[in-house]
Structure formats: structure tokens, C-alpha cells
Image (tube, rainbow, N blue to C red; front, side, top):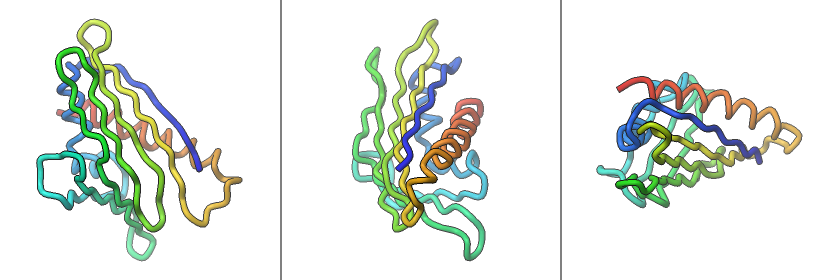
Length: 146
């Protein structure tokens, strides 16, 4: 199991940063070779199911996730979303936290625990580094694009 986190400060109000990070289909544009489908009719809430299909052809896999915590930011209270990964290949969880930062900017914290079944623990370091890189780039893209 690999655990990683990343932090970003964005020149956006927290509610806009939250919107950009939790419009799930946009994640497909931000992560290479990935298509995101929201299974549960909107709006997002606790119990919403999302499937990210990553790869090409027979090498593709589904990362099935369920929203278990849904607390959008309000006033000065931070927003928090937790996704439990429930796929056959990928397990773990991801948390997105958006809170007010300095100068009216948004402070984003992304935490993730990632398990890939059948991948020995000797690869946890490489998996964590790859996850930090891929999701760091995705968060940057999501925050930059309206």
C-alpha cells in the first residue's frame, strides 16, 4: 500500500477550487488515458459512484470509487470529500480538502492511499511516487482550467 499527499495553493476562492476538483468527468481530461463515468445521477453526494477507466484495449482497468464523505466548503469552513476505491484491481481511498488560504486563495490538500492487488509491497515506493506525480499534474490541470 502506497500513501502520498500533495498540497497546492490556487488563486481561486475555495468554492471554485472545490467545483473544479469535484467535477468528476473533468478528471478524465486531466489524467492520461483515462475516461471517467459518474454512475449515480447528480448532484454528487454521499453514495455517488464514479468509475475511472484507465489504459487502452486489453490493458485497461476500472477504478471504481464511492463518495463516503461529502462536505462542500461553506463560509470559512473547509470542504472535504472522501472516495473509497472499490475496484477489483485498485483499492484504498482518496481525500480532497479545500480550505481558505492566504489572500482569499484556496488551499488544497489531496491525500491518497493506493493499493494495487497482486503488486508486491516492494513496489510501494515507486507506486507512491508515480501517484504523487500523476495526481499532482492532474490537480494542477484541474485548478488551472475553468
